Length: 316
Ligand code: HEC
Image (tube, rainbow, N blue to C red; front, top):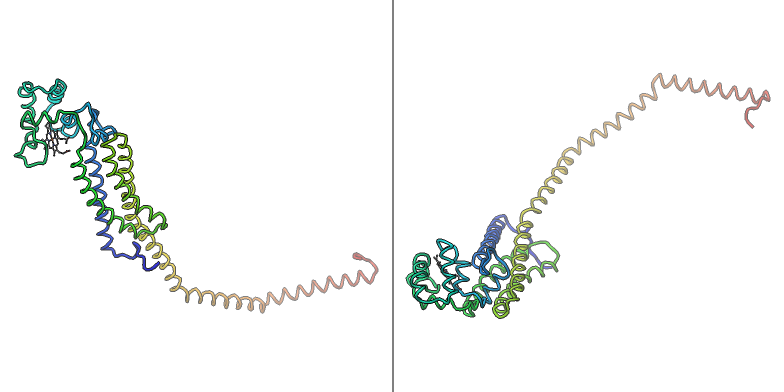
């Protein structure tokens, strides 16, 4: 393979830049989970996020209205009290009559909602300033509109494709089996496309909410796997490598430095040992031992000879 760069080949400045980028994306991912939670939780009337909430967000719920879904879900926090919420829900349940609207509902909306839901706010949100406007939101919840899905689709495709591209570009510098790398680079793009496709499917058939959650989860997993492994390989093994190389170099350097000394000791040792042996061999004690051994040997031989010649046989 021609000149494939790895994390080992890049400078520390690049690593710092890459790390900050990857950490920002990771943090952004956490916030996007929070965003999913806060925009969809409670839509089914129960606190917390569930597949049912997702299905309602895209498919709608025939027995719920957009207004009820909003005050049960993302808009609940804007209401000052839960009695106000029941008052609005009761009004919707009783068929949203105008007289009751003026006396019971309008004051609540006036106080808690119009800061954002009026033309004056400049926000792109449904206005809640007149009975006609509010009553439109009490028709059954048809889920996400095609124009809103198209809008979010183009934002997601442009934005997330950029993120996946840059994170993937860095991930390519990892040192892992090539089949795993190719697979891991493809998965987030496929999941992003499946996820967006699943929005439209869920709008038609709520059961596709499972596909939507599955592909969204897979996107998150594969993206964070890329981020995690890149950060790991960018810093840790390098540091270990360097430390090991440092140890090896240290041992080698001290061995090199000590080689003449060790050699000298060995030589001196050899010389010393041989001198000692020579000295021992030449010493009086050695002479004495030799003489004694000769004497003993002579005695034994003499005794043997005598015994043999006298016919007294110990052997044979
Ligand atoms: C701080 C600003 C703010 C306040 C206050 C606010 N909203 Fe909203 N509202 C928004 C924004 C922004 C959106 C669009 C975001 C979205 O669709 O999740 C929205 C969306 C909605 C929707 C449309 C949901 C849909 O199905 O598309 C309804 C209905 C709604 N709000 C009702 C209310 C009611 C009722 C109140 C008062 C209790 C209220 N809002 C208070 C900002 C606000």
